[in-house]
Length: 431
Image 1 (cartoon, rainbow, N blue to C red):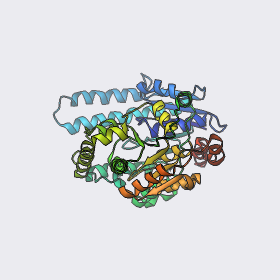
Image 2 (cartoon, helix red, strand yellow; image 1 turned 90 degrees about the horizontal axis):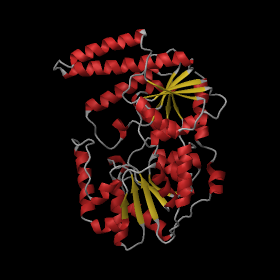
Image 3 (cartoon, one colour; image 1 turned 90 degrees about the vertical axis):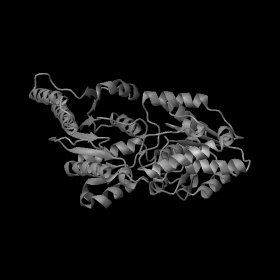
Image 4 (cartoon, one colour; image 1 turned 120 degrees about the horizontal axis):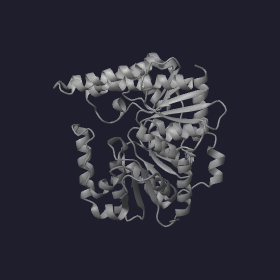
């Protein structure tokens, strides 16, 4: 099997870990002969550093031979695009920009698929991208349907744009991998006619095995500081409405008012400003739901700065090394999300042997079933401050112990990135 993997864009964090965790395993199994990663030229060095060195991995950018017919077509589109720059009609400019991007991407993939004699094409992220017309099986991974199921009411035009894009992919692909059964059911609730194409393949919480990942694990082990007297609750997630940091803030304040001893550490974009009471984001600023949520966060933080400074630590965006370090230092992971496509932090905590307190979402129940870890996870109703407070107080007074490395290996090694990667290959081979 020769896999061509176009990555037109990606997000650092969960999606990047899916890419790295899967590719790292593919280079180790006999079924995969070659992996062609197609990336924007600026992103190639980043992935070369993240992924292990391997003759199986080929790095390419979205380029074409200079004298090819496809290059001439793109050159012609560029000329029309330049002319449109002098035209005031914004729609004309957008049309040519999208046209150029579509054909640049499709021509590049076709050229590289032919050059390497690729057998399959897989997109790790395809939101609002154009599916290419190829002569080989096409697959995609879908992570969620946030525009329909997250607790934000998006404009009708926005929902329609995402729906139409997904529908176009569903019509063209041979198979869709969802990262949870819940996401599969969400898609089928909107597009029930594609049930045969959609397969749920859960991802893994285990650390990836790249050189960079191994370095950060070594660093985390060396920097581990035992702090038995002060329970540390940890939420590794950027600020956002459906991550529901607000419920955790309220629960933390209630616990502080009871004079209990603990620390809450937040890592992720804007969490430093959240604790400082100075948060301002542009996401959905026209949404009243978003504005109300933001105002509540600012108000509760500003009105409780003494508690914020004593009991909370907002570290903002951090490196992988810092994220991993706090996984190793914390006593319990808290994940109060209102919506998730998978919710990687729960699996990440469990396979590190760390207890977790999470909102009662179907995707979290799936992970508990996958890893058979009900003894390590406490659930509370979504958005229920008192219930979360009770779970955290119970942990402070009667903490659960972390599992040893041997216990983790014995209990959870049945589903690692190797199993995810092999399941993708098994299903692709059937096409």
